[in-house]
Length: 360
Image (tube, rainbow, N blue to C red):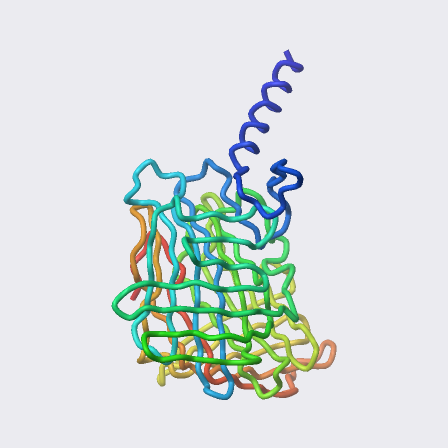
């Protein structure tokens, strides 16, 4: 009996893995498809069964000399739905320069992605570790062509929760700091750049978190500095965990704060001037983050749910983020300010990504 159960279990597992495979993978060898899921968190993760499901790859580009910022996103939503009206793929663009966001949703048949590494296609748009190229048709067409060089990754973005199979929500920062050269064309306006700063992150899962706050900043005085933050209500079965993940790359050091680490605490609040504040402490290290310019000038971003795609949330591309760093002596109650850095512009997003909730 046990042997029969083991054989049945292996058959089910084999069927699931086969359903995860797909054709046209760049890792094919002599015509044999080896596109099995790997542990690379940048890859495509849908297991062929889960529904609803979402997955987006996001590139945040800042051109320091122009003080301009751009967001480019490629993704897929509800690929396992039987209803073609609730499933599809998305290419999205917004910026500090060009007003309202631009996006295209298309058939799921236009989407293809590798399960080995980051390599995805949506129609004529493609995103890899080093190339981001494509277009968004419309009355004001958008075209983008970037070459990207990753300098720093954040391998363990969610700490002990990083890349866990079947987790309802996942976040991974594939490029904590990268450089890009290329062009972005929006209608008749052309943005051409060399040495732009890039942060690339990646979301996937079955359930979007409760209202989330995300900060992405890389336009610091030191071109080697970078900052990302995500706070959310993470759903773990019947439990809701207030989850905070922060990475600060400054002066060649990486400072990490995760609420899943037992020695980390974090709080956030908004003051009378509508500035957002986040304080995170790990042992004898503390940072205080202040984001200003989040009271006006928002654009809508993408929102997915079981019914498909819509827009919502608030994204501010022209925010200013200041980060104060404090340390203290062992067992001391007195915090001393070690330094401060600031980025303008920076991107601050409220309620993005979101699912099953109203956004204030």
